Amino acid sequence: MDRGAESNLGLAVGQANEVAVFWMNREGTIDWWSSGAERIFGYTSEQIVGQNVKRLFAPEDVARGMPQHELTVAEAAGIGEDDRWHVRADGSRFWGNGFVVATRDAQGKLLGFAKVVRNRTDVKEQLEALRNRVKSEQEASRRKDVFLATLSHELRNVLAPLTTGLEIIRRGLPATRELHLGMRIVARQAELMRSLVDDLLDLARINEGKVVLSLERVALERIAALVIEAHRAAADQRRQRLKGLFPDVPTLVNVDPDRMQQVVTNLVANALKYTPEGGTINVMTTVEGNEAVLTVEDTGIGIPAHVQPLIFDLFTQAERVPGAAAGLGIGLSLVKDIVTLHGGSVQVRSDGVGKGSAFTVRLPLVAEGD
Image 1: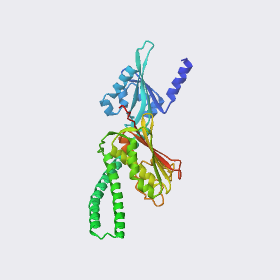
Image 2 (image 1 turned 30 degrees about the horizontal axis):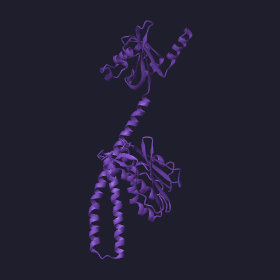
Image 3 (image 1 turned 90 degrees about the horizontal axis):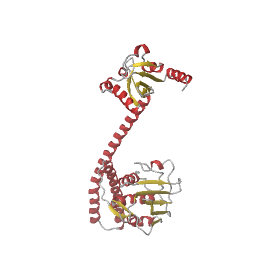
Image 4 (image 1 turned 180 degrees about the horizontal axis):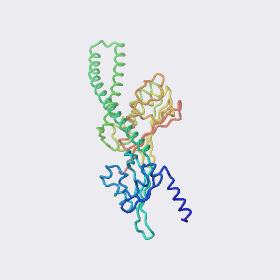
C-alpha cells in the first residue's frame, strides 16, 4: 500500500464517527483513540490514552477476565470477535459489536492490538424483545395445552355416562320408528363428540411428549384400504366416488398402524366433508426416491392461497361448505403432529377456491429386504 492510500485509510479511520477504533500495546494499554471512539465511549483521547482497556468493560466481564482473554484469543488466532456490554465514561452501557486484531511486524513479532467496536444496542434490544415474545408465546402455548387436556378429560367424563344412559333408554322404550330415528341421531352426535374429544386428547398428549409409538412394518395400502372401507357408506350416501389407487407392489413403512390409520382417516373424512355431492376423492400411494407417499386428492371446494400456509395450525379452517359441519380445525393439526412423530412430513396443494385440494403424506420407505 502506498503512502497516499495509508494516509487516506488513516483519515477514514479517524473520521468514522459511527465506529470506535483504537490501538493498544501488548499489555492492553490504549495508545491511540479515534474520534468515533470518543463519540461512542464518551472519553477524550487525553482521558483514556494510557489507560488499560478493561476500563471499557462491564465489571462482571472484568471479574471474568474477559479483557485479557480477548487479547489472548486475538494473539493466538489473529482476530477475536467481541460482542458484549461496554461501559461509557458516564457509567452507562451499550452493546458493542466488533473485533480485536493482533498487529505484527514483518518478522511476526507482536506489536499490539487494534480494536473496532460499533454500538449495536438497538439490535440487542430487538433480540431481547424477540426472545421475550417467544417466551411469552411458549407460555401461552403451554397454558393452551393444559386447557385442552383438562377440557378433553372433563368432556370424556361426561360422554361415558351419556352413552350408557342412551343405551338404557333405547332398551327400555317401545321400538317405534320415530324413537329409533331419534336415538340414531343422538348416538351419531355422541360418536362425533367422542371422536373430537379423542383428537383433543391426542393433541395434548403429543404436545406433552406422552405419545409412544408401537411401530410395525406394514403396507401403506393396507391402512388406506381399511379407511376407505370404513367411509364407503358415507361416500355412497353423498354420491361421491371414493377410490383407492395403489401400485401392485406394497409400499412398506415402519409406523404405528393405529396412529397412521388415524392420519388417513382424518384426511379422508376431511375430503368427504369439503367435497360437494357427486365429487371424487382418490386415495393414492406411490414411492418417490426413499420416501413412501400417500396422497388424498379431492375435487372439492379447494383452499385459498392465503390459508394454505396455515392449514395445519390448530383451529385453522378454510371456507365452510354449505351443509357441512364447520369443525374446529383440529384434525389437520393432529395429522401433522402424528406424521412428524414418524419422521415424515405432510403438505397441501390447491390451485385455489373451487379447484380441489391434495394432501400428501411422506414417510421413510422400508425396503423389502430391511
